[in-house]
Image (cartoon, chains in turn green, brown):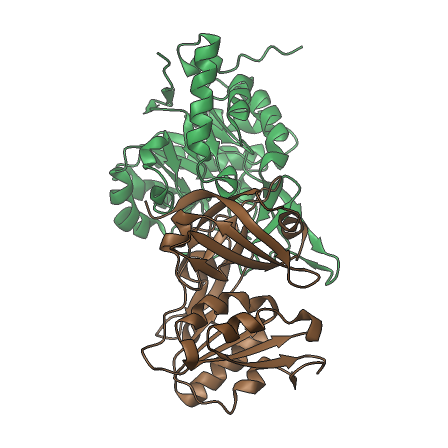
Length: 303
Length: 253
């Protein structure tokens, strides 16, 4: 009998597959495909202190083996999330991660304080959104930024705190260390890579925001490399994401050093992907005679 | 479970013009639930994103869907190469369709180019009370005229170059018609014209919009479109979940 359960920063997930923030809304749409308890957890759409309208369209462009998006954190605000979405999410039999983004450290702290009094399982600090003018990635691309915002939130946050790292940096290991030193209980990576596409007829960028975040299978090798580098630097658990589309990708990401996984863009290709990935992962564990999925974590044998 | 992924089988594939294709697909699960104006999200082999294609027709008894689509880019070009017997991974039916006209109402349908197909199934509901104004670039681009006529509709044609029918816009053909409700799908200037005409006549109007789309179900917030609340304030709604058919007054065109 295989055991898919994992533990990230003291939070028990019944399997390692978590829906990635921004791809899954607040769960209601995908609950029309399968029970949300299919997933180990859900990282909710990034929320901000106040409601945000998001960026004007077009927000989406397809790319080779992936896509760009610049949604711009459209969300109804933290209070609405706590009042309208969280009670329903809580009943779905899966772990709930609140992904928070802000313009200032004060914004992040105010949200963390509001969430202290709720029953969310974990907070994911979004310091890596490339699609908003203020906040987000500005905190995520220097060690000082990562350290400052993580430390500030840590001081007020009573929930397990996961910091979502940006790949748009030259040394991911340094960022991981900065998050750990400032009190993060876990890190998740990678957020999207900043990209751009141009319509050659109009000479306009396809995305109205000009640039967007690249995701999907195109970024998977970058994500594996960064997870491997980050996991080799820190002792806290690493949640791996970025382009996971198959069960083989899931296994690879675990071997690179991930304790748990997030999946996102593949849901757009195939909403049923979580079911297929979990089935494949379970079969692989059986075939390999591995009892517990966590035995795969970090087992890559580098040359 | 409201949504489903269904493997459809391509029963019939034909080219209507040089770049517009006509597929009949066996997909009984989706056909049973479909409403006019809804769409299916079609997986494209080798592509990350599905392609949203409005239903041109469906037949619940036969369990079939009809999709008429134009080759616009790489994805639709791949779809166009599929042969009869091929499997299509379909997600649907998605979104809100066209509300049916009331019994005996004269209904106006205005379509432009590849905006024409979604109106075919919708206009069936009006039977002989359907007034259909269709606009195309040129005579050789005209599609589905006979299909509308077979349903009993009166069809008015317009072409940009005057090679067939009225030389000008499809909405021009509607100016002197009398109708109780209007529906449109096509380029934005056409949608504006139909919205304005319906407003002038004081009749309800419904528009089908499109936008670059990812999830198709309202989760990713990719296919944003500016909408207007009743109090006049604006916000971004989403074509996949709030639409693709919107009441004309709610859309900020």
